[in-house]
Image (cartoon, rainbow, N blue to C red; front, side):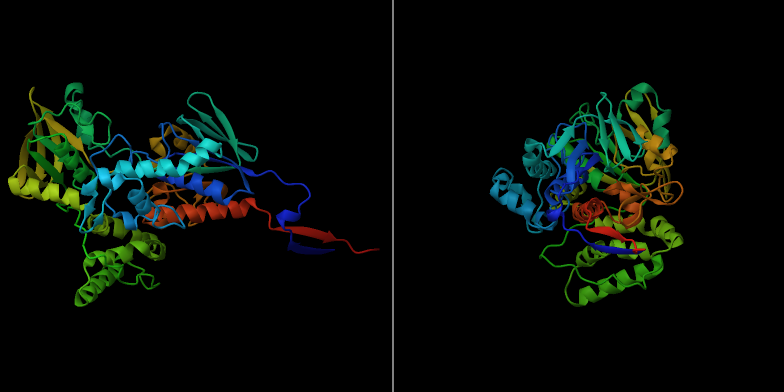
Length: 486
């Protein structure tokens, strides 16, 4: 018997086969861009795209919530590359929508740093035609249960809606911020004055002159400073960091990325650090700022991350991660100016140490901090947590993910970066095999990519993932069996 595989163009098919149904868990930027690409690229192969997202709008999530008007993107508009195949789409929209007219402060010598909410508005505009036409179905419910039913996935929403899908995509974004253990030991009254800065009511009770302690010193802390300034806050603000490292500034001049980090020889954290330092020295000789080196490093992050053995990945995360973060995730110029002014006037203080305890004296909170010089105590009216998302045991942060993990269809990454998946975004099951109908997208897919937080990186992964899904759904060949005549 002879088997021959031959091309089977879909246009010649007598009976059109049904397209695949795709369900996306999460409607922030990641889920939104995937939905957009699926309906635009998968016209013949994707029958239905459903997004479960309890927020009113798709494309915003926590990062680009339209209600938050006081914080800015930390990436210049010309570098956002939010729409695959149209790298200047966001910049073009800013210039044609009149947004820059009402927000002239967005324009800086380092580039245009728009408000986060305006990027959310941009994404809403991208999704609107597909939502209006029904090509994308938005279910405003949190996911309650995900279970396997024959060869499909059944997704049940919190209000009872049930959807069947052939392909399931987990685009569940960042988990809640990590909480210092001392917070859990506070009284209910004291706890009410300790807020995650991303909480809707985080700034509601802060008086104009109240002293504030911000736990954390990354970009989220800079966002908190900007929010306080916009609210007219004039009290003292202390930024507490365990390392004393703060995000760096952007460079002006419009320099392109400098350096090549695609070498397969970068197989250890030490070699990577040595390569970065050597490239920075080379850049300085040519009058190029170190920021351009990190822009190149960012582009090659997936390749060098995949080349690192597990032990070296652990070493990188333990010894270099914070150093990398403060150089990679830089402050928008507007935030940098607010920080500098605060330090110069004495209103903002930078403190290095570990938060050991918090107690309530009836009027203020007393935060005990262990510093290099010894223990000290800060008096404040409010504490804002800017500690960053807690990716440890990622699946535990949402009940439906935890149930999926217990069923063995997903597993949290042992390095605490997200959900285990391969470079194609396929979720790795408890048995170590990739699931061909279950994908992980955006920040929770960091275990495979190392760098997957910024919009450009997520957009690139989304485009690759969508092409893979469409390729799996399409039948490009057929098999003809020829039996020998007797």
